[in-house]
Length: 106
View: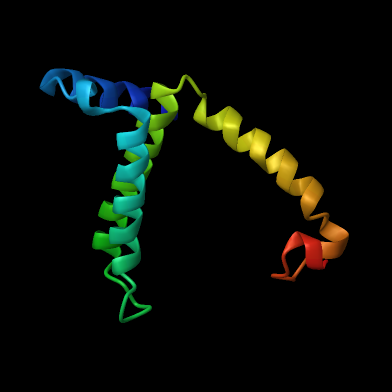
């Protein structure tokens, strides 16, 4: 299933429940942060998190991200490619390969 069909499934799910009225960009951004916290909680005390729970929480984060992108009229694939192009400039391979240093320390 590609992003378009996943987004269509999400939109149908939301429409069936009349939830779009609650999905302002602000509320969706808050929901992303909340769900990301729940994802992080999977690793709170142990690096060996339950894979099923990690997948569930990751799905929640991704769902809200796709919903926010749709709400603001952004193509998720394009904004990722745009950001990747910027990041490539900040972290050229010859300087960044194998390093976790921030771009201004390379």
